[in-house]
Image 1 (cartoon, rainbow, N blue to C red):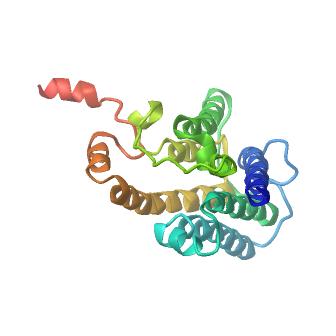
Image 2: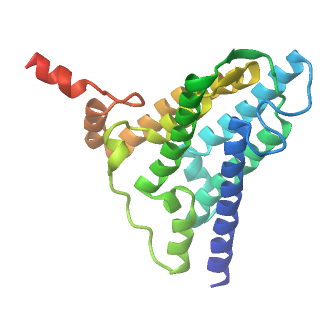
Length: 250
């Protein structure tokens, strides 16, 4: 009973830290409210800023990708209870994300700047991206994704049910709406600085590479079901005119 309680508390602390890091990310990327953001902070020379920022994003990418792989999960099962694995992933991801925010070096050189209607359109797309990212986690299982459900199941002394393949709402439009939301949030800005551009480019490259590994894992888990899903639904860019084109061909 004590172990179950500790697992549950561990999951709740990890989730709380994720919530803090996610909320800070809103301000960090958009330069809102927070004291240190993607364009606001102590100045440093260009080379130092590029090297430090790339190292920080590389650290996040390596942790995020390595710990998500099935081989790592099998290895970590030797040391961690199954109910703790996802919470540990969330905890370390959140800590590294907070480290990125803390040690980020702004590069304030302006690449583009918009005003008026164009600026408002980009701001709208920016917040739409965050909304898509957050909503997509609830369309599958938000608390499973962040480790809370596993701890609650362990608390009750039950077995985790096997995962079924589902494609609710946005998942019928693109296979990875969470990543689509992040890309919109990262790129849609009325003022694009060199530091923000570096952040957007590096994260876009990481997302495109990481999705290849994730798709491979999903095919291994769900087989022909996921392969059929891949044929029908695009990865990131919605097929806005697919139905119209199909009807024209007919």
